View 1 (spheres, one colour):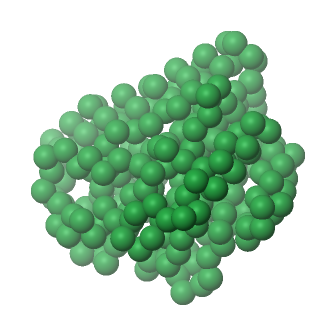
View 2 (cartoon, helix red, strand yellow):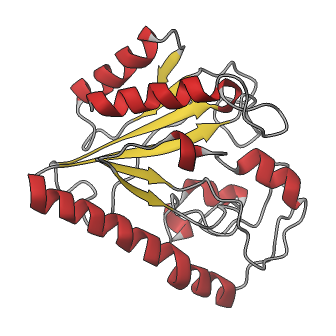
Length: 234
């Protein structure tokens, strides 16, 4: 099993970012590099903030639907739709070469190793999300679930979805599938090509484990233990 953790970092390198603390609080998947772990899993954790480079986006803005909000692979707009940072062509090329492509090679190599060792590979795409949606979210002004499971028609077996959904329901959580977030990470080398690569996204509502100021709350350890139990079953 491979745990892909792309949005846990608050490291913005040396880039000048407007309203930096507010945007980090809103956009970081806080503590997901600690919540999602298992002794027998390979963890691929991105060490740079998504405000600088979002490795879950397509590198070509023409293929990336979030680029119209200034939130493609290199963000230029914030959660209010205002300017976040200036990214010229030279900056973009540097970020892609130094961070984006390096990260994706690590993920691809991890998947290839699992395929070589076991004949199949399982990626769990590990995320969190805020209780309140922003203007660019598909569920703006709607009630959000506790847990969102993201799938891909080619790479996510139905029995895997049912197993994960049943687990969270048994813990008393409100669970949605592909709403408000859909899809899951698969390296381009294998994307819609190799059915032996399985992938599923887990999105956890941040209200379950952190307070409004971004600090861990009293339910944190419980959720962490539940996620470990889930990975035991997978």
